[in-house]
Image 1 (spheres, rainbow, N blue to C red):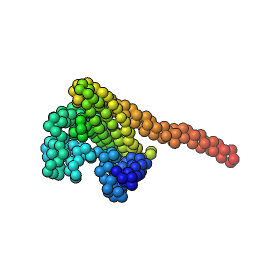
Image 2 (image 1 turned 90 degrees about the vertical axis):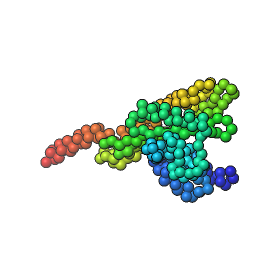
Image 3 (image 1 turned 180 degrees about the horizontal axis):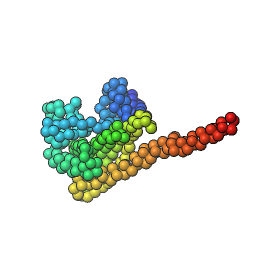
Image 4 (image 1 turned 135 degrees about the vertical axis):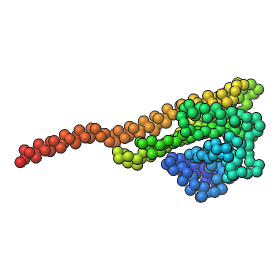
Length: 268
C-alpha cells in the first residue's frame, strides 16, 4: 500500500471513530464517495449495522462483507448468491458441512438467549495457507410502547490456525452495536447508541471445532453485555438522574410557592 493511500485510509478510520455510532452508514457512504479507491479496505475494517435478506426458500439471512462477492450476497442456508452470479466464492466441501452445522447450532443458541425474532447467519472460508475463518452474526430488533426502536447487532469473527499436529489456535474478535430510540414527553426524542470491540484467544486440542468456537462466543457475549451495561446504560442513568431529579424539584417548588404565598399574605 502506497504511503499516500495508507494515510488516507488511516484518516478515514480516525474520522469514523469520532462520528455518532447511529450514523455509521451515512458517514461511511460519505467516505466511500470521497475515496472510492479504498472501498474494499473500508468495508472490511468498518463494521456496519447488519441488514437482512431472504433467500429463494424464504429463509432470512444477514448481509456482511464476509458473504459478499461483488454486489451479491450468499445465503448460508442454500449456499446461493442473490443476485445470482457465476463462479461466486463458496467454502470447500468440508467447511461447507461445518458451516451448515454451525448455522443450526447458532440459531438454537440465539433462540435461547435472544428469544423469538433473532436472525442469525454463520459463514466459513479458507485462509491463505493453513487454517480457516468464520463469521457468526446475530441481529435482534424490537419495538415497545416505551422504545420506538431497539436493535442489537453482534459480529464475531473467528480464525482457527493449526499449531503443530495436536492443537489449534482460536482467535476471536467481536463487535457489538446497540441502538435504542426513545420518544416521550419526559425526555423528548433521545437516541442511545454505541459499539464495543473485544478480543479473546485460546489454544485447544483436537476437539469439535463448533463446540470450542460456540463456547468462546457465548463467554464473549456474556462479558460484553455486562460491559455495555456498565459503560452506556448505567452511565446514562447517572447522567439523567443528576440532570433532572423530578421528585426533589417538585418538593422544592411546592415549598417555595407556599413561602411566597405566606409573604404575600403578610404584606397585605
